[in-house]
Image (cartoon, rainbow, N blue to C red):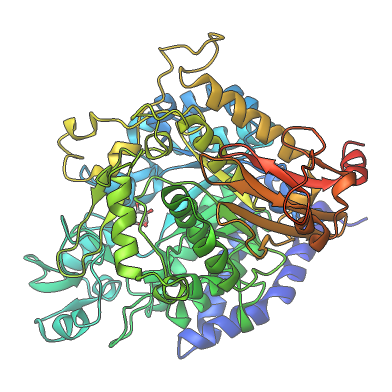
Length: 631
Ligand code: GLC
C-alpha cells in the first residue's frame, strides 16, 4: 500500500505537470530565461506544498470539487479594518457571530501585515509581509482566525500589496545600504532625465498630498519611483527576483489559511515609457505566473484584481485572450459602482444602461466584486465616449457628480467631501459613507429607500457583493476623521468609521445603526441566498430602457430568466409587460422575489404595466422556478 507521503508527492507532480506550461508561457513574456525562473518558482512551490497544513490540503480538495464556490448566490462579502471592527484579530474571531448573522461568507480584512509607522496609507505601505501589525496580534492569531472563520463558512481575503513596499522594508533598507541586489528591486534614477520623460505621460494618483511619481532619496542619492506616497517605493517587476519574492509571499499567506488574495494596485506594476504605466500586457503575465504557483501549492486560493481602471481595460484582469482562465477570478466592478451613484444623482438610467452594455462579458468562470463603495474614494469613471453617446459632456458630467455628492448642487441630498481635486485636469473624487451619500445625513425622506435600492442593485447583479463596514447599518460619515493627525490630510477616513459596539442596537445584540437599513438588507441577503439565478456564471445584461427612471437588467440562467427592475426616482414608474415577455417570462406567471408577491398589472396606454413605487427594486422570476428553488 502506498504511504500518504507518496500520494502527496503524486498530487504535487500531477499539479506541476498540469500547470508548468502556463507558468513557462507567462515567464516567457517577462524574462529572458524563463526556464531558470520556473525552476526557482517550482522549488519554492514544492517546499510550500509540503509545509501546507493538513486542513488546508483538505480545503484544496473540497474546492477542486466545487470550483464555482465563489460564484454561488450565497456568497456575501464584508470588508473592514480589524481594529475598527473589533479591536484586533482575536476581537474579530470573537465577533464572527455578527458576520454569520449578516450572511457573510467572505471577509476582507484591510491591510494588517506590519506597515511602516504612520502615516502608512491605511497599511498599504508594508514593511514586513511575514508578520502582523503588533497591536492587531501575531501570525499565529491570523492563522487561528482563518480557522475560526472557515468553521463558520467564511473565507478570509487579505491584500497582497505588490506594486510597492514601504521605504522602511528590508529590501529598501538594504538598497540604501548599498547592496546592488536590492537596488535592482526598485526603479531608481541618478538624475531627472528619465523621471521627467516618464512624467510626461504619467497621471498623479494623489495630487494633493503626493504630487509627482518620483521621490529623491538622500541616502541613495537617487530618484525613486513612487507612484503613490513618497514612502511607498514601487518595486521592479522586470527583475525576476521580485517575482520569486512575491511568489514566496503568496505561498506563505496561503499556508496561513488566507483564501482570497486581493492584488492591490495591480494595474501599476509594469512600467513602459510613453504610456500611463497602467494595464500593460505584462501585468497579466506576471499575474498568471503568481496564479500558477498558487494553483500548484494551494488550489483553494483565488485571486482578486484591484484594478480600478476604465471599463475597456478591465476585462483582461479576468482573463482574456491567451490569459483566459489563468489570472484573477474576481475583479471590482468599478463601473457599476459609479453608475449606481450616477443613477441616484440624475434619476436617469440611460447612461448606465449604455455603459453597462459597452462592457464585454466577463468569462463565465469568474465573478465581479459588486460594491456600493469601498475604503477608497469614488473616482468618477464615466467614459467620455459613453457620455457623448447620451449627448453629455464627460468632463462636465463627472464634475457634476463630484459636486452633487459634495452637497454643492441645489437639490442634492448627499453629504460627502471632495477628494484630491486636481487643478490641472479638473478631476475631483468623492469621499463619504453610503448612507450619507444617499441622503441620511440631510434627513431626506427617501434616504433609507435609496440605501436599500443601492444594496439591491449590488446584491442582484451577480458576483460577490461586498459590503463596506457600517453600510449594513446605514452608518453616516465620521466627521471626526481629521482628529487623528496621521489621517488629517486624507479625507477617505470620513468613510472608515469604527463600529459602535457600545451603543447597542434595538435588540441589544449588535451595534447601533439604522434599524430599517439593517432589516431591509437582511431580507435582501436572505432572498438572494435562495435565488439560483444569481449564480455569477450568468451575466446581467441591460435591456432596452422603456422609462428613463427604471434600470432593467436580465439574466438568462439555465433555470429560467430573471428580470431585475430598479426605480431610481422618487416617483412611481412603470415596467411594461413587454419587458417580461422579451426576457422570456410570462407576466401572469411570475413573482417578485423581493416582496414575495406576484406583480399587479395595471392597464395603461397600449399595454399593461407594473408600477414600481419610489426607489423600488424588483427581482422577477417565473413562479415555477421560484418554487423549484425553494425546494
Ligand atoms: C489601492 C488601495 C488604496 C491605496 C493604493 C496604494 O488602490 O485600495 O487604498 O492607497 O492601492 O496601495
